[in-house]
Length: 169
Image (cartoon, rainbow, N blue to C red; front, side, top):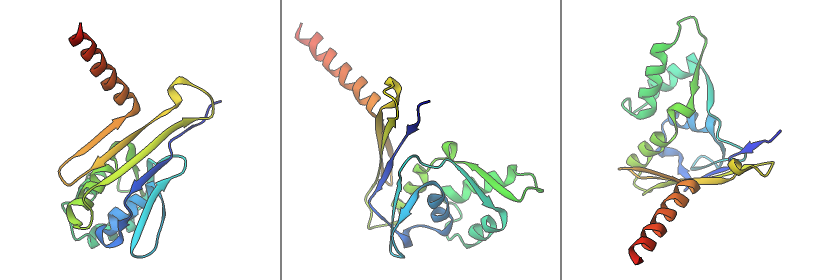
């Protein structure tokens, strides 16, 4: 059996004060993290966790404390709470659908010290499978989110080289 991994890093370190408590809680649930009270370095040694389980009292406390009630994280959590069965004791979040990109984008918008955030991932596999290797990079600014995988790069480069070859002919 092959094991697929996606080690990931986030640059730069994120100032702790640039994140709301809710954003911080979501990000530390998705990523491993290091750092003190001033800055947090987010990374994933094997993969970004895409399934979070949060206790409802904690979720409500984080929403009440959120100084940016219109943030992406707050809106998404409210939408997920509205779908929840009232008898549930926890909120399960599929972060593969929700994503972290817009959370980081809100942080960039609010933090003058950060111009952009880079998320870089490698895709590896314990067996030499054609679909098990590559990577991607995402650049997040206040205005845009751009992502390119190695597959996309190869497709674009191939197209450019073929177009250049046809122009010479």
